[in-house]
Length: 198
Image (cartoon, rainbow, N blue to C red; front, top):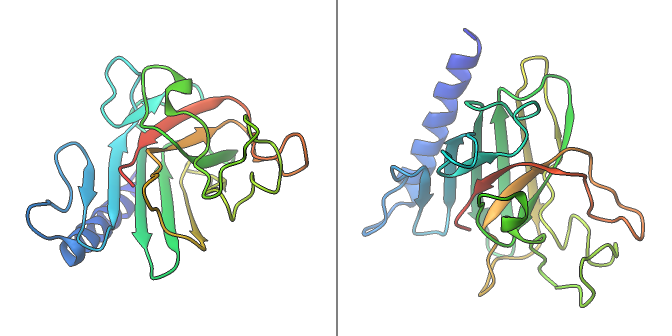
């Protein structure tokens, strides 16, 4: 726990710096709901996972694998021709691999409320399991493996920016993401969800 506190402090400092660098009126860098928007389109979500009946922006649907009170941070940064997304988690099951992706809608009371994966080019056949569409270039994949303290940070960069269609959340799944035809993009049950205003 003593080693976790400095990491959380550093995380909050990163959030504050990102927000300050990109903030403009009338937007605040990080609001009381744990969401922030900046003038450059930088988005930040910081939250503690809670069961759906008490959650605000971070939902756990499986308290054995994402304990209430564990922490999540998502930072989305648009570049000139790309988008960088970073996911950090604290307090999950140690030494375990999770799948994770950006989904279409905000989190809700039910795991399915966040919709399907956000795809830059949408697969005409849904649910999408074709690796031509369900892949880490056309979608935002953030699979990670926690360390012995249940912490992980993962970053991805996709070669496109959000336009009219925007993702609404990052969902954490029970398994590493599959890549083969007929299963591409699948990663088992939805364990948790962080609402992100991309």
